[in-house]
Image 1 (cartoon, rainbow, N blue to C red):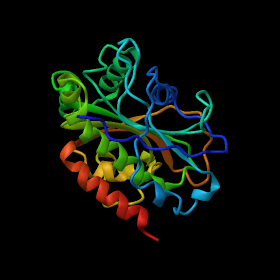
Image 2 (spheres, rainbow, N blue to C red):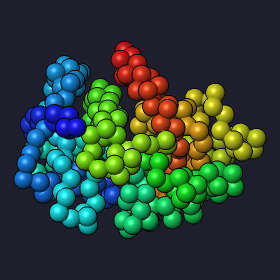
Image 3 (cartoon, rainbow, N blue to C red):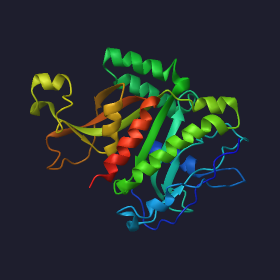
Length: 284
């Protein structure tokens, strides 16, 4: 079955801030192809993007990598996902990347091995550790690592379109990837999501509140990415771990600490996530 048509790109003129080395490496590979044949998926919502508030700050390209090279299995490539980048600037012009990596398919990549070891090291909750180890090991065939990184000033109205494009492509890939192995690699049952949040410092909450997060306390957590709050709510399980950062403390964050948040979200919850994200971004 042929692949869906590729989306066309648009020009972007301003320069991005950098984000994590891991996400940049994924974005670089997602935006570069060795294939001689290039085609772009039509982006069904591309017209609506140009009307998003804040879109006029810079026209954002939604350019996706072309077909995975069949001549080499040494490259760390993905076949689904989107990058927002400066056209024809592979090194510096990256504004955002969103993709899903099958943990079994990329199990031998050094960065994936290191990530697995790191997550198992920082997970201190016994029950959660067992579930995490299961998804990273025995069930890795069916687990996708959701990578979503962007510069802080990317218009939030783009988020529903970026995630819709990603999850649509994951669905399409289960039917139109060239081999059964690749098709099966997108039949995901769970997504692992790692993000950074700010959580109120222990000395500002009593001992009982420190033992577990009161989900009714809107001031207990500050989400840097608005979609993380939705993933958090829909997650099957999650855990926190402290982060050491040299980021200067602002007045607004003086009572908060930087914390890593790892979540497992069932694939069956993704339609709900997409609907709630669209509703969230449409709020005045």
